[in-house]
Amino acid sequence: MENSKEISALVKLLDDTDQEVFQHVEQRLLDYGPAAIAFLETAWEQSLDGLLQERIENVVHRIQFNSVKEDLRLWQLGGAFDLLQGAMIINRHQYPDLDEQKLLNQIDEIRRDIWMGMQHEMSAIEKIKLINHVFYNQHGFTGNVKNHQDPQNSYISQVLESKKGNQISLAIIYATVAQKLDVPVYGVNLPQHFILGYLDEAKLDQNYSVLFYINAFNKGAIFGKHDVDQFLRQLNLEPQPGYYAPCSNTEIIGRVIRNLISAYSQQGSIEKVEELKELQDVLVTP
Image (cartoon, rainbow, N blue to C red; front, side):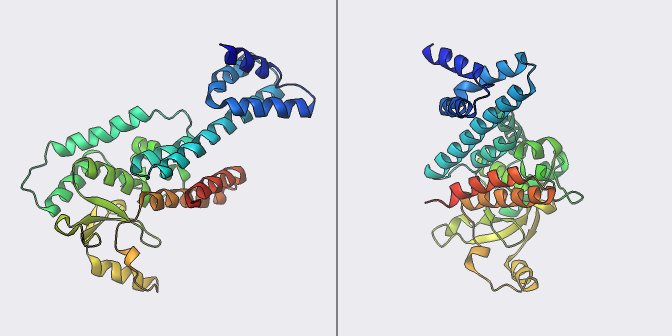
């Protein structure tokens, strides 16, 4: 109750013309964090003052950004075990009111449709063919080849709505669904491309031996190690173990951020790029 009174009082001081007073008020509201947002939004709705509304918008945005940054830090500190959670945190940078439960329900619907056709005696290839049929034919997911640089391709919520995404967003959804079905599919951080690897469960103790690879951007096309070799030769790159084996969830989310930085740089969204670089720094900070 005491906090509510102070937040309300601080919000009323946001239009103070004294810059020093304004900066103090702003910092106090930032210190309160998400608890202050409802008060700020109410004040915005009740105000006709353009300057006050702009200041409120800026404070709300900074609170939401700080929250995303802290959640990303905690996600990494906690081991970054849940790839989808990492993707949702990045999603909230652009869509702070993200309905995470709706997103989880959409993922579970895909999982359920695949599970209905899954049989215990299926081979690895048969399982992937079933996933591909449900994912691409029934649910209609496809690579966004016409507008590949659109930043929307990197936001999981938007990809689930539009059914169009880039290599990494489609791979994140695909791998998440597969793992929920105990199908061992994980991301592989190939240069200039992002693919998936189906792990050989009989050799999990031998540096994650991969049975075959999957291209989530190309309707789940299945290919082998020799195809990766050929791709690397085309790029004039020396083969490295990391190009063939699963990468960490932190690396995957780091690549999502790099894609967004590239997309927003092309649009000239300087402020967005600077914030994304801050998020990038969170992942590289030990």
